[in-house]
Amino acid sequence: MEKRRKHLSILIPVLNEEENLSQLHLSLQSILEKIGEDYEIIFVDDGSTDRSYQVMRDIFNEDKHVRVIRLRGHFGQSAALDTAITHAKGEIIVTIDADLQDDPENIPDLLKALDKLDVVCGWRSERKDPFTKRWPSKIYNWLARRLLNINTHDLNCGLKGFRKEALRDLEIVGEMHRYIPALAAWRGFKVGEVKIKHNPRKHGKSKYGFTRLFKGFIDMLTVKFIISYSTRPAHVFGLLGATFSTIGFLIGLYLVLLKYLTGVGIGERPLLLLSILLLVLGVQMISFAMMAELTSRIFFQIRESKPYSVEEVLEHQ
Image 1: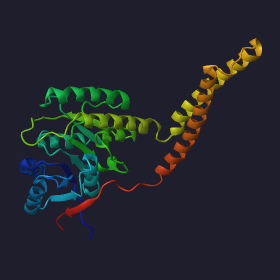
Image 2: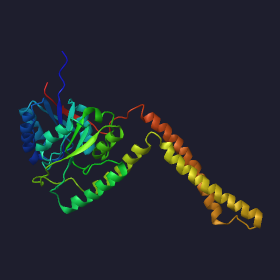
Image 3: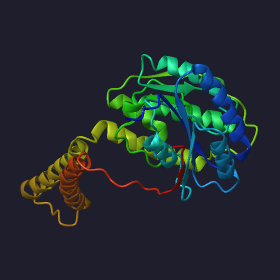
Image 4: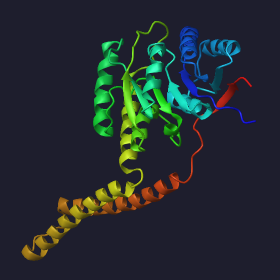
């Protein structure tokens, strides 16, 4: 007899959150029991160096709804979430951070919104974070709305809800986990948001930093390219190549006419070097456009191996 699929999967990436895990589990357990749906809770240990994994093992031993996955090292939040998504059995997936700042009490609101949507983002409209975290995040989200053409206020929020089909075939690497809603919208899924309660951090240290913000911005540009040109990279590189070649040709034509109409020497003029440089760059860019087009076609036919390794999986049979 085929095993019945679980309806709801709660995915939690964990990095050094030993003081928050037990309270988070109790809160989730209380809320999920009230919802009344079949559920599972998946903790993914992303290379914690404190007692987080031992706490997760203890929770696993006490609750048959809990599964624990341990990565062999620290691979980042995207890798942890990708691992959890791969192992999730639920038709509805909710992600939440382990720091207790995003309130689990808002999970029913996300589930209600998923009746009409495919992806729901939590919106921390009243964030309980320091100024140094709030304003860079506001600027980042403003840029994301403009570049990615997605009408959400808080892509950084860890509390999100998904229909599982919206997550299929996504490559979640780097800091790409925050851009899942934008990628889903690009693929035609309906994306929305709900306001959630945000709490100040009581235990543990924030993983936020300007290095992470910079990496997120680079990934934003990557997502912009994926959305705009992943299926037609020749358009952007070919256009650049054609532009360089045209400008180089026109400069060269000007110099040739100058030589034959006025007799002025052009051999030592900087414009000649610029013309040659632009023509060479143009040919290179057009060649690169053709290679990018072939690579794009191959990418959509095969899948690469995952850039992380799972050490252990605990689950109830």
